[in-house]
Amino acid sequence: MSRFWSDLTHTLSPYVPGEQPRIEGLIKLNTNESPYAPSPRVLEAVAAAASDSLRLYPDPASTALREALAAYHGLTADQVFVGNGSDEVLAHAFAALLKHEGPLKFPDISYSFYPVYARLFGIATETVPLDAAFRIRVADYDGPTGAIILPNPNAPTGMALDRAEIAELLARHADTPVVIDEAYVDFGAETAIPLIAAHPNLLVVRTMSKSRSLAGLRVGYALGHPDLIQALTRVKDSFNSYPLGRPAQAGALASIGDEAQFQADLARIIATRARMTRGLDALGFEVLPSAANFVFARHGARPGAEIAQALRDRAILVRRFDAPRIADHLRITVGTEDQTDRLLAALAEILAA
Ligand code: PMP
Image (cartoon, rainbow, N blue to C red; front, side, top):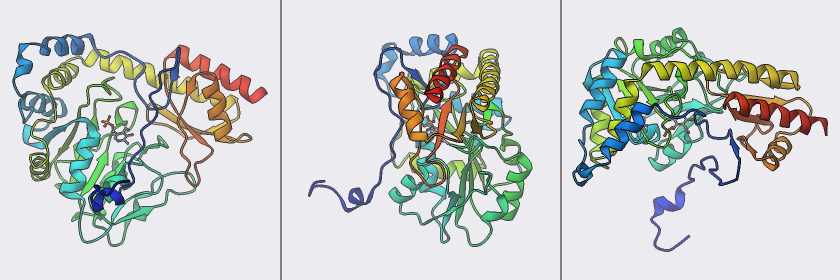
């Protein structure tokens, strides 16, 4: 606290990211990173971009990357916006699209950055409770609504809506901006991208951090009607002309070019998720059905905080949220096969004690 702070700074309640500690031999299952290395093509492209050209500013519009993303998703470049991680894209969406007369609605159990952005940008919010089975119910978003944002699959539950449910949400709110945050969609949910053509109010936000193993590169993007993209671009160009450096633009472009490794890594993570779910189930956990690269699980008999601490003592990090209804749940990232074996063995030992 300081007398030099602005009034706004005093009102903020910042997001707390998962820890990134330096512990020898750590099994890090707390921030939903990929356990697999990025494509070698990405590493080559990033290395090639680390050249004399770093003297020069990058393309402020990331044109080559936006064109490649447009082609990949069957859209046009004016339907694509890129930013420094999807967190930055989301922040711009809050500023550009989500502040209206009515409240911004999102699930009560969801990505904890949403209320942080709402506060930063002075947006009134209304949280909509998940149902008893931790599902999002589209009909619950009826009533006066300024805008809607939700992750699909939801985080931290991992549970997904199908495309028909997103279409229903869009139909019920045709005059309201709707942002679908698809950070985890590649791990088994249906994307809303095919709905963009018929719904000028839909913005789909994506990240390369999870399914493309590029959390360290900081590349996210948004897809939607050119008018929505223009709104994001206006905010971006009022904030930072060059959000993506040359290595990030080159690396992201190369990632889109390696579909084979992308699909192979997804298949491995999805298979490991199934095995991890069976293992947790056998140990007495209730595991929500996950379409993401993490599972959300609660043990019937032991407090979540105790299990998380006992795992930490064994150099295994998982994420827990001290929030109503989910304080005993653990969000566990799907790691490698070996990490999963070690997680399950550690849990068996902890629960036997
Ligand atoms: N959306 C959701 C739902 C997330 O969990 C995350 C990761 N914390 C993000 C967006 C942001 O990811 P990034 O900024 O790495 O693209």
